[in-house]
Image (cartoon, rainbow, N blue to C red; front, side, top):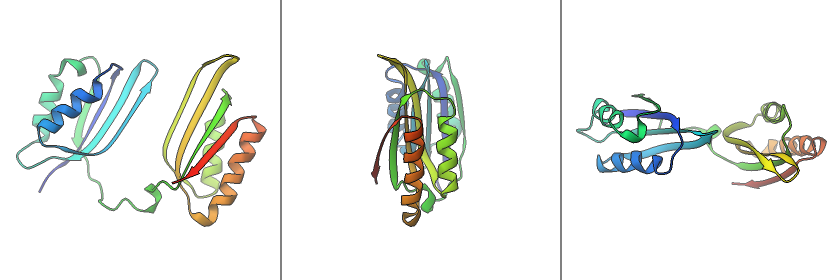
Length: 174
């Protein structure tokens, strides 16, 4: 039976970071399951979850990745990961939406609470602020799992938040 592992790296962002790690794993015969990557300031965060093929050990992967110069100035964590093949309905993305406009403190908290109040599960979220022509601009993206019968009320709540805060709101169903 194969072993499931999680690889997590946080360190300086640089081009080729994902390529170095995934090329190595591919050469070992590893088929990557889930992967997330984000640039956070001048650093990057990368997490991969996968099952190792027969004959490849977690210790071997850890030793080889720790020896990579591209990963030497960050934090690398490798460990067992036990996950279910059936992720359940709360991990299926049903709606995606984006809020954009002025950088407003508390925006994520308000949106998260509205989603929670309507039984929505945040599957993925990204929020970034950059300098625009008239000051700081924030773009927050949400991918959520939301029961169809609760969607109209939930999306109305998000639209109300966007209106109150003078933000642009866009959404799509998955």
